[in-house]
Length: 365
Ligand SMILES: [Zn+2]
Image (cartoon, rainbow, N blue to C red; front, side, top):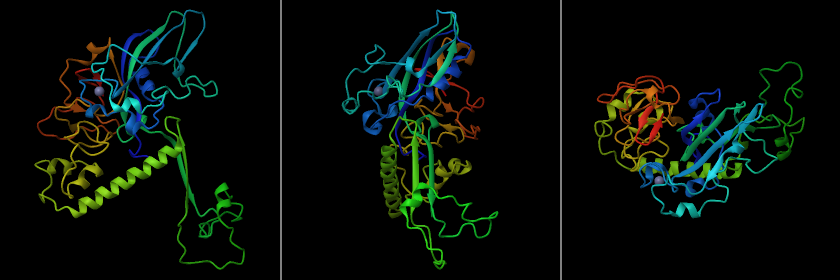
């Protein structure tokens, strides 16, 4: 269920107009990014920004939310995800032409989960006192969890097999009472309990697995499982296709093989041995479509040209831009996880771990 099967919308850019709270802009931007947004049918309802024809963001590939809260009383006030307002028509849209994606959206698509529902507690963003205020604008974009955990709909996944312990997992180790130390779960009702005198089947193998999927509300667990299975099917089909296709060059891709082999990203190195690179880039690879790099969390990659959401974090920009130095263009993106700067020849080295890189439309890490 993890690893990039489900498309989701999450806040990716934050433009801070006013922030007089005790938390810095980046802190709040990160929290905003982690707020689950309703993402029903997200694979069809919103376009990837890198596939969009707009320059930075439009309503086909983005969702705008605003936050405008001030405290005027002598008390501590909670700013929560309920304060995030969905912006339907803003003048920020560069391309007002409606794509087919918009028709496929539900009424509450892009809303923070639980907004307008008193039974769902909102997500706390910040606390402010009298005289403090936060005013900002957020742009949510489509992504997958391989790019950044904020695009993962799953909050918990568990699985179990052999609820009755037919395979005798406790034979080599138990404290005092095997039965007591193997409490039966509700999944045990799905299978017939073995008789006490039943002979042990030495050749038995687990063949029935019980999965439990819990989401943060952005997608329902059913949709997560169904889309996950569909994605798995696609990947296997691509694998079969790749095995049937003769590699054009045994050394790897055009000149890029050495660089790719030098890094430790498993997904990247594995691909060198199998033939044609899919057009449009690997599904889920952050950055541009034609150039492909390691997934978020890997080493620094050379993103040619496209200042996509490399690294995938959420960054604040606006008032604090001067603090980050002079803009150098969207050349290197820092991975969200390890972020090690690799020896990529001919590209600027990443100045530091997850340092923000200025982009044409603002700040993006
Ligand atoms: Zn667009």
